[in-house]
Image 1: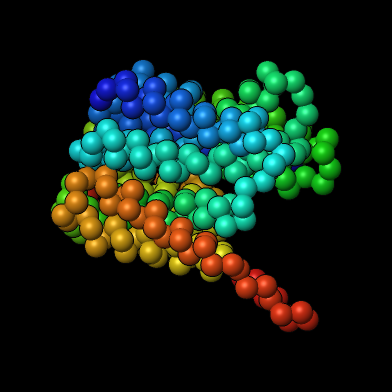
Image 2: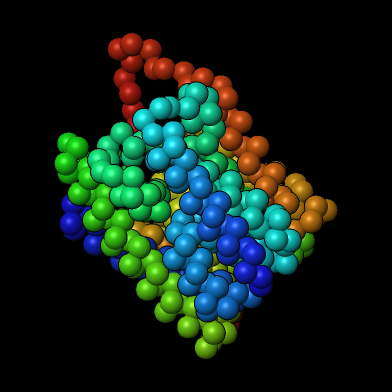
Length: 222
Length: 99
């Protein structure tokens, strides 16, 4: 668990660095960039907001896309509330740490005690690495031209790393294709940022009930 | 950039987390709502990839980023860790700009 946690922390540090660089390149100050990582602390939303702002999108469309992506942490909260003990104060602190990685590490553990240890350990490690990475990235981004080092490609490359593990599921792949196609179809005539909001129609794939595999069927997973 | 974005996003993101963990607690949402919420990242993040790879403002463009991201996709497909995917994407983009 500790090894997995440290490996994850290293990757999150690099993510944080690329967020820091991209965020200042998109027009935020070093302070604003660090405040985003300290207080928002959910990577996809932060990347999304600064990606839209950097392209010249409005505040409303930047916030809209980022908040759509933040909504899933509510679902993780539901999953974690069945596994975490403690006072209201502790739960309010736990809420800030409830993101993809901490939830995934916690639910992977075999019993309640280890689930709690995994959650807090991963939470504090990632919070530290994410924020230190952001600070170093923001300072670096202010000092160099990010394009020279290809760092403008760090945002989409980060998005690729985020989305790939989700695409093992057929419905997620379909949602992804719809999201991408809707964006391409609308980008040239809608205000910047709005096509990102519209891409959320891809989730309607989830309205249909999943078909359970027939009893006795061979289940093959890639 | 205005601080409004930072403040509203911080409050909004925390509100979602608290709603799930503290307010709703052990209760569960209708299955269809949970299924749709779970699909948001796949749909929206894919649109963001297309945006940051193939567009500048409202214009579709094909430049060094496309090659960098193609390499990043191959790396992700070959199960490379996230940091390797990011570094490869940036490095290939930077190298192509030098030639």
